[in-house]
Length: 366
Image 1 (cartoon, rainbow, N blue to C red):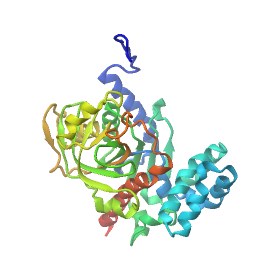
Image 2 (tube, rainbow, N blue to C red):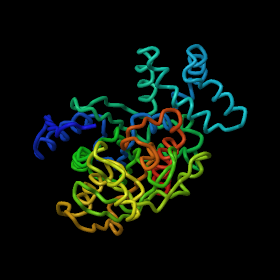
Image 3 (tube, rainbow, N blue to C red):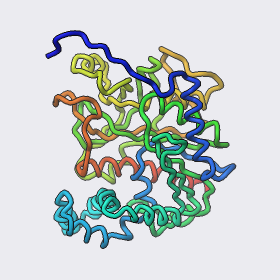
Image 4 (cartoon, rainbow, N blue to C red):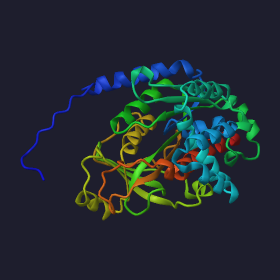
């Protein structure tokens, strides 16, 4: 129980809009040497493991080593879960367990990180850790260097071998929150010649679903700009459902981008819930502000209804996986780690994005 008023003081490392821009530019300049010049780019904001595991193949190619490590260390009782998934023929779950176990496997021997990065590099995936001394890791993935045999079997489709004819590059970053998202995407858009797609994937609180569900929105209200964005989401429930056996995919949702996970309470959320907002997250709004400035020759507006429905400069996809249910539990927004339980929704969302990029590029090549 609070006995008296409290004053909180925050010290910002970069206190002005200009300084944030300079930091983001320094971040992208550290990535630039890994990005081939003049190539079309797909931008993905997700995490540092999903796309790499799906496309690089290290975990699946070292399955026996990872399982031996799990049996020896008894990590989170994962071996019985893996064996049970294999016995049931649920290869998707078994593969997701391998992906989840890779982190513990790497931490068990620091030299394994170098092995993973060398394996990824041979498959066209280069990881840049904390570029520009900013804690937003990035990966540059050249589609022409991917090894089709290493791609997750769930993503293989007719003609996938031709993906090596594509000149496109994926820039995937470990999703930043708040206005950092705006500055990072703005920096990338200034540094590339052609941006073919922007895909935003992250965890969120759900007001009408369960932990482990996937939410696909078509409306985002941004508390930073006070704008409400309408857009045509390139991702649909049909894209994600094939990768989901336990969770539910909820489409046509409305998302709210909040300023802080610390400030939410039931009364606050109830106001937006009555307006139909069921997804609460922390980066889609600033990303859409940056997307607006990429598509339009002016700065994003404020306190307006902004339509990106008819923009044709790039494809836009927004997808979230539920990590919190704050309406039913006393917990703050984004306070819960999904752990093993969230692997299906995390990799289902990432697989849908990867598959979408593959379909687009294969269609261009046909």
